Structure formats: structure tokens, C-alpha cells
Amino acid sequence: MTASNDLTSLTVAELAAMLAARRVSAVEITDACLDRIATYNDALHAFIDLYPEEARAAAKAADLARGAGYALSPLHGIPFGLKDLVDIEGKVTTGGSKVWAKRISPSTGSLVRRLVGSGMIVAGKTHTVEFAFGAWGTNQHMGAPRNPWDMREPRTPGGSSSGSGVAVAARMVPWAVGTDTGGSVRSPSALCGLTGLKTTVGQIATDGILPLSTTLDTPGPLARSATDAAILFEAMRGGSLASMNAILSGPAPRDVKGLRLARLPDHERDVVEPAVLSAYDQSLAQLADMGAEIVSVTLPFRFADFKIPSGNLIAAEGYSFVKEIIDDPAAPVDEDVRARFAVARTMSVTDYLRMMREREEITAKTTAALAGVDALLTPTTPMTAHPLATAEREKIIPSHFTRMANFFGRCALAVPNGFSPTGLPTSLQIICAPNDESMALRIGRNYQAITDWHRRAPALEGAA
Image (cartoon, rainbow, N blue to C red):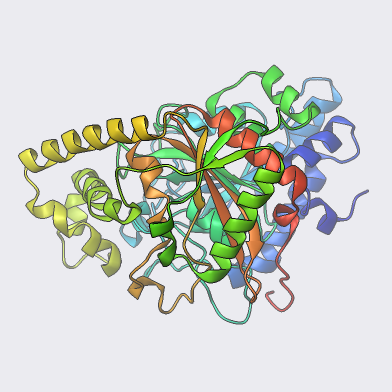
């Protein structure tokens, strides 16, 4: 029997291999995760709700099915965390809002049905920023998860998939579902030392997920490696068993030799913290040593340019879903979140349509500027995790580099690429063309084949 602390340190790929070889049971894995959640969740606040009885029942069923030769997929019996934005019929989905503290989900979203249909086990719901509208991971009324990389001072986990990031980083579950509208998978992945995939809109079903921006919303996995992200992407979009097995059994895809990877323009570097910039430059050097060509490009924008149009688009579409709550001064809404919706109150239909036309125009110019490269590489966030107490007052926010991918409909992968002198994770963002997740994952998997940043785990002594 494998020790429970060893089981919680394993990746999805490693757990799948052990299950297939019958070296471990789904019950052992599930119990190990639930035990770790029980030990650390009070201190870290990753989960808002847990389903221990259902999870253990599903694990027993998984073991019986595997024993009879009827594994539903290579992932049958592996637990995961689910962002509290995704509906499960009969369960509460709050969307991070105290207003919805007793909101019972009317149905189960396609994404959950797909994952459960492949035999995976929902351990519970993870915390989110209210209405998923925030990059730091704070939540005034429901509580903010704590970044596990600093147990001396509470630090930001990144948002809005804050609880998912903390749950995976703290080894409570091997992976978790997040959603990404402006960086909400990648920001917590970056600040918590994880690998997170922002998928292209349309790749993964969004019904049964509380919407923020129907134009930009997309689900994605927060995991411990690019290999895991590749497997989970297949599972989330309903890929074939053959494709999942190929990822599990094969090496990283073709190397990066000959790929043209664009670097961050020099004038964009001044907002990046020194430790993050040093790690970024080192990543470029490593990829160049692997045979990639690092090139300069002229972009028709500055990353700071997206703050207003991206924020306005999200506010306008999100306001249409939560207008009555936002406009009710007595409703217990996070004041930082309420302020982000303010612009939508005065936005006209003409303003919205003009904004969408301008988005199409700049998207076309950006597509032309990046036509000759395989990926654009940036730091995922300009900073490491900041103290929770002061984060919302910062001028530069974690989504500074991430929201561009959402605005242009691109996919992107965040991978750990170092640590600051104080032991906080840094991250590299790999931005690729729409629907080219395979390229982002190829680069990420090859990068992780020569680095071990993604294998580091936070020390949680004293957190229980």
C-alpha cells in the first residue's frame, strides 16, 4: 500500500499509470485527498464545499469497475476539484457570491457530465472570486483562499479560480477545473506554481457554468504538469480514449527545434518584477538552447491597452446576468467587484457594438503581426504573489499579460519557470493561435522535460 502523503504528491499521469497497473486503488487515492483536505483546508480555504460520501462511493464503484475490466477511461477513479461556478444538479453553486449562498443548481453542466462519465470523482467545490470577476483571488464575503507558498503572511492565490489553484498547489487534489475570462486559470496557476491551460472558446462546453462574458469565457484545467494539462484537455473536450492513452504512454511531442517563438517587446518589460523578468529571460535562453528561434515582433498594441476594452467587455456582458444584484445597494456584494461593473450601467448598445467592431479590427492586425511565429512568450503575471491585505490597491494586476489571449480568442499555457528569492513561484506564458492548444502544450511539455520547477511543492508545516 502506498502512503497517503505519497499519493497526494503524484500527478494525474502517475496516478493513471498506478491505477492501470493495480498498484493503488481509487479508494486509497480518494481517501488520501480527503484526508489532506481535512488537514489543511481550514488554513488555506481552498474548498467551499466537500462531497466526501459521494466521492468515496464513486471511488468504490471505480475499483469494482476496474476489477471487472470495465475502466471508463484511463482517468477512472481520479479525484478533482470543481470551481464553484459549475453546476451539479442538487448541489449549491454560489458563484462566489453570498447572495447565492443557497442557490441549488437546477441541472448538471455538460463539462461535469463528461468528466464524471469518464470516471473521475468530484471531491468538492473550490472558492472563486465573486461572479469570477477579479484577478487577485480575493473575496470579501465568502473568504479568500491563501497561497500555500507563504505560510507566514497571507498572500494572493490569483483569481478568479483561486480555490482551484490553492487546492492543486497544496496537493489536496491532483487537478482542478477553472474558468478563464481574462486570465482566471493562468493567474492562479502562475502565482501558485502550477500549469494552467486557457483553452479556445468553443473547445469545451460552457453550459451549466455561471456566465461572466459569453464572448470570452472558457473552462480549462489547473494541473501540475503540461502532460497532465494535455490529458485533461482531452477529457474536458470529450477527446477519444486513444488520444488520452497516447499522451499517457508516449513521450513529449516533437521537440521545439525550428519553432519561431516571439519574445516580449523591450518596452513591455518595465512593469515586470525583477525575479519574474530574470526567470523569463532564463526560459527564453533554455528554449533557444533546445533549438527554438527566439524572434522579435512588432505588435499593434501595448499589453496595458487591454485593461479598458477587456474590462468593459466583461463588465457589459456580466452586468446583463447580475444587474439586479449589482444595482441593489443592500446586497452583500464585494465592493471591489461591484465597482468593476460600474461602467456597464452607462454603456449603450452603440457603445457595445463599436467596442466589438474595434475588437475585430485589432484582432485582424494582431493575427497578421503574429502570422510568422508559433507562439508569443511573456511572463504569465508581472509579479509574484502579493500580500492579500494590499493586493486590490495595486495598479498593475495579474491579468496584465493574460487578458490579451482572451481578447483575441487565442489559447495559452502557463508553466512554472522559477522562484523569487523569497520562494514565490514565477511563470512563463505560451500564447498560441486559436485552436492550437497542441502547439502550446508541445512547447510546455518539452520545456518541462528539461526543467523541474513544476515538480516543486510548498511546505505546509504549521498550516494545519
